[in-house]
Length: 79
Image (tube, rainbow, N blue to C red; front, side, top):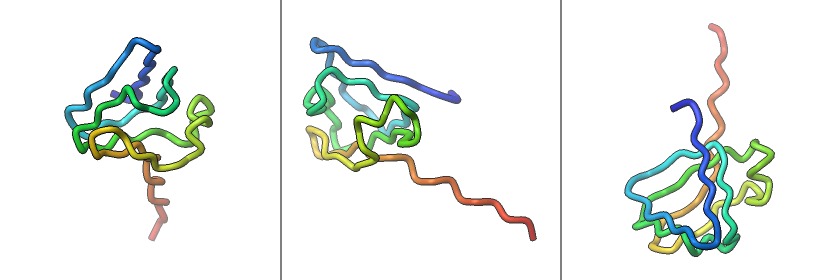
């Protein structure tokens, strides 16, 4: 997929079953307590306006995993 967005409301939970890549994460529970990571990492695009609430930070998730910004793409140079 070129992009994937996830919106969780106050009644939602997400059990992560593998490292995941999101374009946008919206979560009514801004403590992220409704994301059960099982030790996996969830990556998000820090440069997306809708993700500003995450502050470009790496955050611990329930279950030992992390929510973290996608690493910057390497800059291609011509030789």
